Length: 341
Image 1 (cartoon, helix red, strand yellow):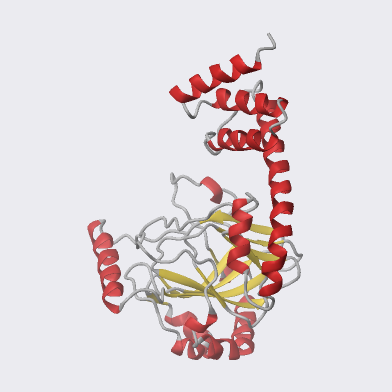
Image 2 (cartoon, helix red, strand yellow):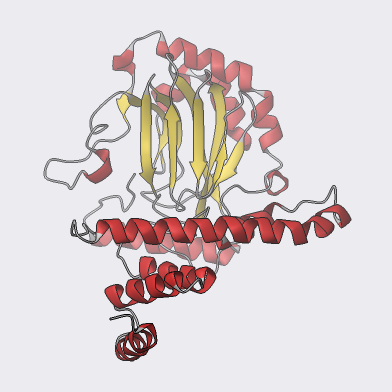
């Protein structure tokens, strides 16, 4: 009818009654785009996209419009990024040599290049702990001694692996009837195999005896004592051409340590919005309750020693409370470990 002003007024009435009406938002964005108001249109497209729940199956008639919305939002983000970078140039020059990693992550999130990742433990959430993907090494000075033993630890692992695949246990071992979700391919598979030295607070004396130099290197490891949960120390072997799907850990009161031992080219690791490569002998600490994944795209296995430690942001009293809570939950459910993948 070529009455854009009346159309806009009708859409505004609709959105006043139902601000998240998907088709109304899309139509208003399209109308603004036709009027040449591309930036305002992009804001409405962005709001429309945010109303769609993750994983929802869209009707075929709506898919082209949604794609149009995504394209418009992406084009606007690209224009905004160029606009901001021109103005940030002076700030970057003034602070050359200083770390701007967090500010760059802020910018990437604003421009929708990186999602916002939060701590999502599958068992226990301890509030007011920072959401940090990879922790500063300065909080874990004992890592130096562990890294110094890398060659000895690797040699003992190679001896273990000489026994063949049967020496390892499948890391994913979901019981019959459990919802497998992302673990369907790896459930009861040695493509992700492990050799436990400690598991959920229980040492494996025979395995420790078989790896005496590793056991000695672990003497200085500040163990995270959570009954039926921690400590755990394990050799983790990811087979060639195998991926560990995105997942989250059980308890944000603990952090995870990786000491890479055997790392062929083509291996990688992501925690939240940050990706890293493993480098043999260089340990790092991360929060596994933030979504993370790993991959081995090479033709050879990848091997890492994995440990857990307390978050440095917990007091001694808080650690005792966490341990007592976890122990109580396990006892309540008949001794079952509250941990999971």
